[in-house]
Length: 283
Image (tube, rainbow, N blue to C red; front, side, top):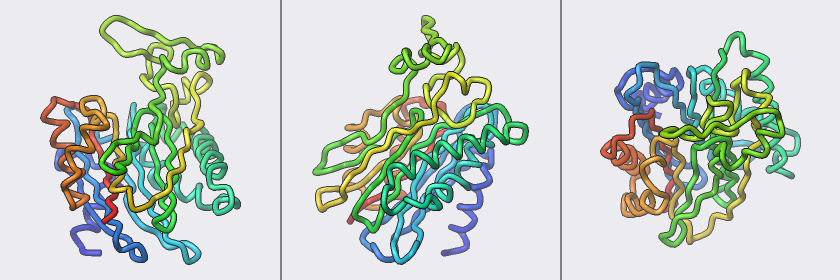
């Protein structure tokens, strides 16, 4: 890895509050036809950057795993930072990861959330959404998410959403069954207990009794029809549809440039959030 790319990855890990974008790219060693790139830009808010990414390949027991994720923090960046450094390791250490990957992912999401809640005195009262993708030997894709960061796959030129946007209005009954409520004030989005605009998240200790951290999990076979995958925070999806995102980058062969294109387009449409994006391209 070149020195510049190492520095960029350190910046992403540190969650620096600079408005300077963080960016990088790489490719698989075994699956050399698979490339990946990421780009992050701080939004217009006064707080430090709250988005974190993972975009890397890892060799495990003779297998190649592509590990990709977007963590979109709120009320502070510490929970998102914790997820960046702990969630995948918690998933991979599950004893049934190779035999029952879906159960292993769900269990790791839950145990990681418990760790975050136990460390609330250190990590603070904030939380984070997450969308994760594990690519196994370039053949099988496991996507999981809580919150509204999203994963979209392009197959034969068309867009397919692999994640679920966990909106409070869609999970009103579940929230109410836990003793919470969903506000729906004019001019605002629905919120859990009048506060949080997502129904599932890591952390958020003060709301956790009314929130879930159980992920939606999707399994996708990677064949010759798959062109690329997009993972992005809601700063993109608030202003760009799935189909438009796919159309914007379908002719961009460089994954890093594709991620930057999506963020640039979102900013041109006045998206003010921190924005992060990972693109995984199959050549």
